[in-house]
Amino acid sequence: MAVLHTTTFDAATAVEPGDLAQIVARRAGTQLDAPFVTDARSKRRLSFAELAGAVLAWEIWLSASGIRRGEAVALCVADPLEFCSAYVSIIATGRWVAPIDPTAPAAATDRSLDRLGPALLISDRPEPAARFGGLLGGVPGSGGLVASLPLWPAVVTGRGRTDVPHGISSGGALLFSSGSTGTPKLIPLHEHQLLDGARAVAGELGLEPGETGFSPLPMFHINAQVVGVLAALWAGSGLVVDARFHRTGFWDLMDRHGVTWVNAVPAIISHLCNGTDGESVPGRIRFIRSASAPLPAATLRRFEAVTGIPVVETYGMTEAAGQIAANPVQGPRKPGSVGRPVGFELRIDSGSPDEESRPGGPHVPGHVEIRGRRVGWSGDATSTAHRSDPDLHEPWFGTGDLGYLDDDGYLFLVGRRDDVINRGGEKVYPREIEEVLRLDPRVSEAVVIGREHGALGQVPVAFISVRGVRDRSGLSTALTVGEVAREHLHEVLPLEKCPVAIHVVGRLPTTGNGKVARRQVEDAEILVTLA
Image 1 (cartoon, rainbow, N blue to C red):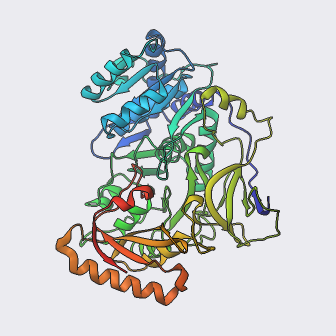
Image 2 (image 1 turned 180 degrees about the horizontal axis):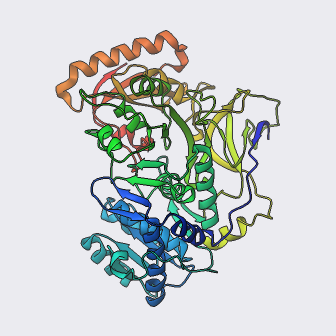
Image 3 (image 1 turned 180 degrees about the vertical axis):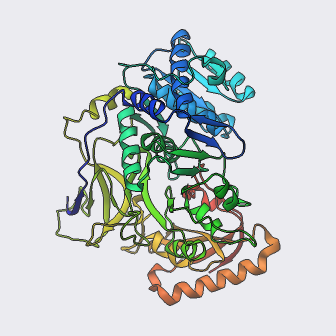
């Protein structure tokens, strides 16, 4: 292997199993009725004291239902506030929570349940609860149970108490990776891995009591769970949650709830670049955090110019319990970079198994690899328990991403390993082309993929969507934007990197957390093609 550069972050004292219950108790004892989670669209809220009562009630109810510590509880909950209460409580009582997309088609949910084999399913919707109950009940020996939410308000009798369970075994979360480039992997993350990720996020963002975050991201993804829920709990700060992002009245909503920072993805930031007459951006918002997908540098600059709010671009994945790297809130932020590693050893490896090591240095692209106790390896909870032993020497984990480090240790991603296009021996990185296409503010999204070619092996092909154009009624606009994009590409890129075709589509397919599903882009409806 050719290790080009290594950046190390010295973590503080490790988080220990059982700490989540203690954190809940401590917050309830010191902050009492301070809001922990607030629903953005109603007056409902969950205080720290109520959360402690919920944990106690869940322990009583789960034990009475025969759900032992260490068993899995599937959580198919659309209401974000109810999700937060159940998610924290299940882990804090030593069980494993397995969040499932409540909006997924029936067949996809059935596949998830088949892979998980949970002892219990919690749902806040009667129809899926009944159907899933039939499915679980039909699995020999599963002992599956089904319960419907809301649960905690009905059974909490010790609301406000702080005597949550002590001395429990460690729980955790069973999470599916995004699956944007293939079949989702099942990733087990122990409680201490999740909390270590939350601590890293809270420290990097400077969260503390009195802060109020806002998260409209899907709760069944790692981002909302660690960066939103657990980081707020660790810091003792509040979190406003919404089931989805609404552009209309967004800044008024932020002002009404006293939001001081926003947890977002590039698609949200792109929408917020376009101002609306009569709206004003609250001055108390310190930053907006971007994650889950690459943020075009042009979009970052446009958002900061329109709103005056700094963008903190970050990089993470499910296997890393959320965050891998981040630009500092206080300090140099580099557009186009996802920042410096936080809580991990990170290196760039330009070698491969079939070649000799070769010298290298900063600015040379290679495979992004990480190492640390927070890495969750695919498999089951038992095997991961051995891997997470802090006394064991962890192997390097390949993220599947390609990137390089600059002289200051900032990481720049250039694409996924599987997305690199080999055009006659010349490596073409899709993100470089996509960044140029997104420079036109009329382009809402751009994706470049490799297409098979008889002589060259592969050639790049671009798919773009145009703001306001969803069908053939906007054909003239689509054609104009496509022609401008083609001319611009030839002006700034060498010929071998220019796509052989630009397809303007009505809409690009995305995953649940806003990532473009690259493996499905060729299925999108093409409005016009420019060769």
